[in-house]
Length: 157
Image 1 (cartoon, rainbow, N blue to C red):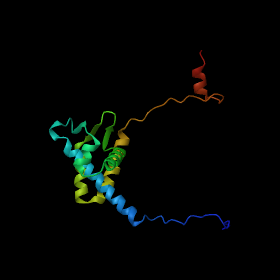
Image 2: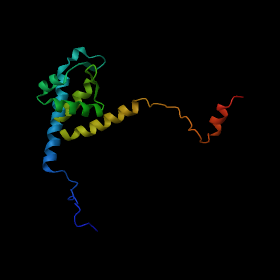
Image 3: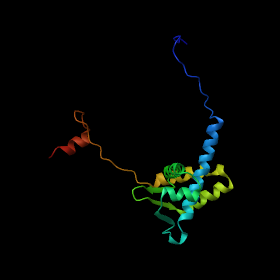
Image 4: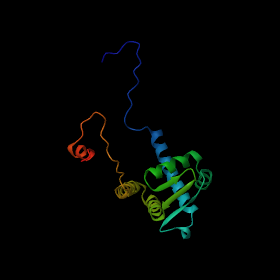
C-alpha cells in the first residue's frame, strides 16, 4: 500500500463491538422494556377499546414511572414505534398500543429476553403485510416516449 509519509491512516477497527458498546446496548434494551412496562401500567385495562389502549402522556411522567432519563424515554418511544408496537403522535402527546401485544412482549422479556427479537420480527411482518400500500399514479417524464397504452389513452378520439 502506497502511503504518503505524513498522511494519517486511522487504525483498523474490528467489526466486533467493544465491551463498553455491548454494555450500553444491554442497558438501553433494559430501559426500553422499563418504559414499555411504565406505559402499560399508565393506562388502565378497563378503558381499552377493542384491546387497544390510548391516551395522553408526557416524557417526564414516563421517565419518573420507569426510573430512567428523559433521553432514554425518547429512545425507547422511537424504538417501539419503529417496531410498530406503539403509535406516537407528538403534537398531542398521544400514545396508542395493543395491550395484548405489549403484555406478550413483557412476559417474553421476563421469561427469556432472547425470544423477544423473533416476536418483534413476526409482528412487524404482519403489520407491514396488512398495511395498505400507497398507489401513486406514474406520470411519464417530459421528453420520454410513452407506452402505446398511455399514448392512446392520452389522445382524444
